[in-house]
Length: 633
Image (tube, rainbow, N blue to C red; front, side, top):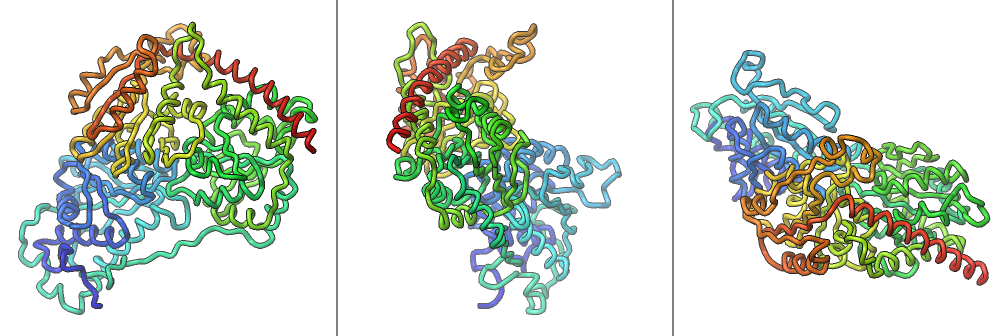
């Protein structure tokens, strides 16, 4: 087969001017590198790129008015697909609005590709309208930065352009380091529209002498095909890890929020099965939900946030009755649960627990600074290696401690609530996790929703993908990220607070503009409910400066963007009313907002009371279970 685009590929050889050719080459290389979606925002300087994406038959376009919303939408798409969804914007302040999402993508290791149009070099530092310094605007938050050459139909420049684009995709997904943002700054002179310019594209551009630059590689291959390596351990280092696992009697597998793309779930489960270690699965790990939950040999624990601070699990107590883990294998980012993080810290202090942090990029993601080993290796390969060379040797009493505590936690949570206690926000997350369709995507906001899902989202057999923005952990862009993640056929549910919902109101426009379906559950505690769990609650100025009540009727906001709306007052109507509204919303097409009005302070007090009851139940259950396990030995 000869070099050249497909018959339905927009041609580069008969482009009306050099800018049009430049845009078509960039898009052609992106498509050949596996990119088939793009987020576009209006602007003049990016016209050559916008037109090139719009005319390509293999590109799905998402249009947005707001660059910040567009960037978070692209972030959500990448979380769901593991591939970058390029962002296209004009010059000036437009690309500054990408910055919050760039920070999140960098910290959360999410692929992202920014194509920011720019004024030509001759206009820099001239006072020309909408001309700012766009060089390295995002600093160290991007994995790579480059200003592309200004359009010129010259073989070497076009080959350089193709090379830069192909490499940008690879670097964004994973080359020598973790996935993350890549910034390509693209300057254009006028005319920006596909206006014919005599002599701009030479008549001999389609000759064989120019074929490589003009048409790229044969067979629709990317101009540069990168074969990325996977970090692996030497035989001696693998043996060292295997030996540590084999020697452990009280081990844990801790799975934190997963990177995008996620490691092979089967490999991590195989490790758990081979070792017998309990798996403490963050809701964003990809291991909390799935068919493996009820698989023999794998114990997935989800209630740890509520019981690891119980006296039965105090690492500083008598080791004969309150044993601490002797080995922890950690995968993914830092766990959402502060209780879990502090338990691991205290275990290391009291018992010298050895903690392996497995990270393919060699990053340090352990903010308590007690981990003993950083293992720079591909998690999938390491898990497969260890599981293939060890046999389950876990102390039965150790494993039974977690089984009993987990059972006691969920039984206590499921008990009929005290009629004198108002509903708490965690019950909303529990209801969503229990009733969401199978399959589905669940996106959870920061502050309390992700923490409540961590504590009240019971592991179960369901095809549920749970996502959130835990890189920088901001509340900005939550709706946009969720709508981006759910831009496919599976039902999408977002659970967010009222502040985050209001903060990203512009992002709601993505649903009607791009023909998407979504159910948004808004837990309205009239302000920042998470501050009730912080000491600042006791100080003067708490309501004005921290809880910041909105006093906004969200039904008007939902109506403005074309969403169906329903409201439940949790204390007055009960959570069964919420469940009915939720079921109706997820079963219908279009956009739906289900508001649950709660008293934030009362909700927190109910959580505290429930937490104490869980501790009491865990104390009794663990004591009985350990006694039985020891007796059986």
